[in-house]
View (cartoon, rainbow, N blue to C red):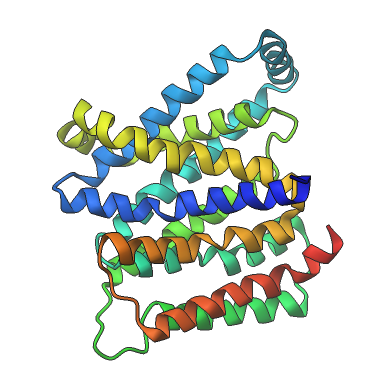
Length: 299
């Protein structure tokens, strides 16, 4: 298998993994499990497993890690701080799907498509070209369709929309930080410290509610599953895939998160997907390709 194809598969698997996460969180909610306990179990599992993998790493790589962090101690702190966006994304996203269907929640989360364009302009000092502006507007149009805004028989909860947009804002921070912070460190080390930051935010965000909802049965049954597919696999697979195929094509493949989430919600939660929603999803995927077309050709 060639390197390019491997990169495509890594990103496709990472996107699909993250895409189905909300479906299983809502399924667990329907079984009477609280969101705070699930989020804490997810990140606790991630912290434990990543710490064990780091400890068991080869001596040569541990030495390399120590030297790297020693030369730039602020890098580790930056990764932990930016990792806070991971915890905020999960918290807001899981709150959003308490009020709106998962198929709508993932659409709200993917507003990072146009938010990323705006952030790129202000943070990276890059000019926004015509393709990006048009792509962002097309993505917004697709969102209105996919979120059932034009369907008269649907009432969307404003809380759910608000939490979903906050999740998208946080997810934009995740995408920005993972592509720019601590690139000199090994993939496992970067993921480890980002998850540490996410875990700290989960504790601060949910605080006392964790004591009411968390138990070891939740950790064993759900923490391992959510932690593996939501906290560990996506960042590891993305970090392996993006360098192989570039950010342009990588972003297009990562958009598979949308249909993966919608289809899983349809199969597991029996959420009905209307024709307008499918049209909206297709428009959003087209917008992703439009925004990244120029990047793809230059990577």
